Length: 485
Image (cartoon, rainbow, N blue to C red; front, side, top):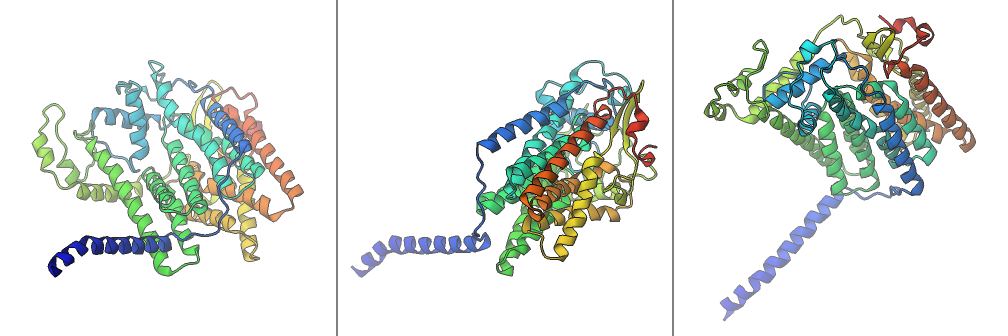
């Protein structure tokens, strides 16, 4: 009788233990992701109108004259070849992670492109068909999406409507972002995921739960899978964990979760990359890590059993990442358009000439009427921090700028002004935040209006170099002779 009673009580006891275990887990998770009194991310009808407006502005500024020029320009030859090799399944080597290239190749495949452009033979020559326009539309879409996302990120940082308007206007009118989004290049995809990561950090600030935290971690993994120059954003997300006022063990747990999620996403993207390229490269002189070379097969006589016997994927991925870093630091020196990292904030180095013909130019340069105020805001934020008047978001943007910018001082290879793109994002946010929170409302309105005017004026002044238009007064537009080679 007692045995029967004990048996009947087992399910009840098990249920109680499960409930206690669940409550304990819930308690631990609530401590790892603490609830704080933060301002909710509430949007209104004004936000909806401005998001639609900036979506249209972002698309128009990027898609205008997308067909011009109708020749292969600058690095289109490289990224066009990458797309071809993905579609053919032929292995290739690049110094950057593969996500952006995978996206471009996938969209090209869905659009019906068969990889039939010989970009090396077309270098500097006219495209044989209008298919190149479709290839350029992918980076245009991602570049255009950065503009409304910049507005939303500023709003998530507790910025007002006009302050967020100023940030989005600067992003919309920044020449570097525009010209890199208008061609078969991957930088605009990097910019998109950089914006998404910054937005995700502040969505998590507004809504602190596991969903927003994992969204942030995943976004960081995606941007790290585009280029390692985005590492400053990951460092900012980690630094923010240690700025929270809670126990050190929970800060460490959150940091470990961030690192592991970024690594997981990163390795997953590399696994897709290597799985998409089973065949030997088109160029037999391409240097390939031994463990990857052993996994490749002849496209004309494929031996899939040989590929199945290759070393584990994780080993190949680690070998490839290490090999990429070695190649990156030995990529080259003495390029005519290279510039030093300390020349970027005031744009005292060289621009990058993409293309020129019959008095028309494509020049990758910065809108100095944005860059100069941004540099001033960085100096101002350092002063504000010294006097302890810099608020949380201002400190975040200052850290993001420094984390993204200063590592370039350690890079021995050639660098170019477009490497300043991510620090510039943080600088633009720092500029508008500093104006909003360090001055009176009336003076804030005046300064933001001035910043918007300068950004728009600079855009119209130098936009002929973005859209391959004739420039009748070239010398007037060259404000610093150090810009040109």
